[in-house]
Amino acid sequence: MHFIQCMYINTKANHLVDSLSRNDVHHFMSKVPSAAPTPHPVSNPLAGPTPQPGGGLDITDVAAAFQRYFQAGLAPSTKRTYGAAMKHFTEFCSSCNILDPFPLTELTLCFYVSFLAPQTMKAYLAALRNAQISMGFPDPRDKSSLPLLKRIQAGISRIRLEKGKQGTKVRLPITIQMLARIQDQLQSSVSENKAMVWEVACTAFFGFFRLGELLPSSAASWKVTTDLAWGDVVVNNLTEPRMVQVHLKKTKTDQSGEGADVVMCAQLAPL
Figure 1 (cartoon, one colour):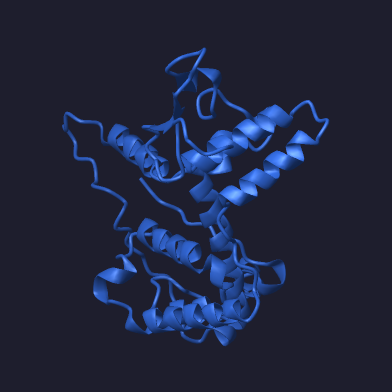
Figure 2 (figure 1 turned 135 degrees about the vertical axis):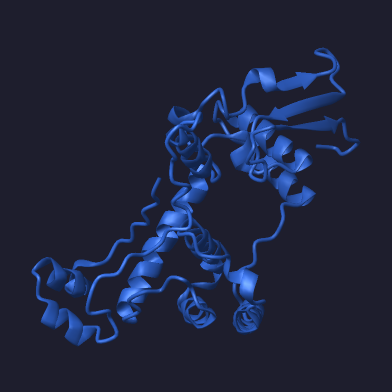
């Protein structure tokens, strides 16, 4: 069993590999004088045990199950985010002439965080940690509490907060007054979908839902296995409903897909 970590390198920055593919060792060694002059084997901690003759268990079956579970450990959306992060990190390493970034060092992480946009910092660092573990290296946090990285992150957060105070728009929560204005606008609308829009607005507000939990990204992407359907909404009384229960098949924080039930009761509010 083998794990192969692939990284995209821009064509213009791929001169080192290009020199090796052309067997131009002299050019390669001139650019990377620290490289070993002769090949040497590299051990893979995740390679697994070597099958022994006469064993009753086929290790290839276990290895296949291991790979399947390992790949299923991340949600598809997380894999896409991590993929974008690794491409970005590879481009950063190429531009900074960092030839072998793994295993990660605290200084490399500090430089990369300083290069990142603040809003992507947390997700991209998680992607690097995942890549490090996938390659068989220890978790970066096992050997150190990473004090320098924490200091850099605190500085980024502080500067970002100060910029926010200087006029950057802050996303505020929806209030009951805003919901009332939505109602006023819908009452004067001639759209045939205004009742549906109002139902979604009220459900999201009183149930504290994300819109993505109630609506698919498009009509074509709706799936009965993951998205809200009529059977997921139950009321206690059809003529005079006083309580409604909404079953979510999957939430943002529910990666195992167990689902969640949200119960909403009638309110005394005028809406």
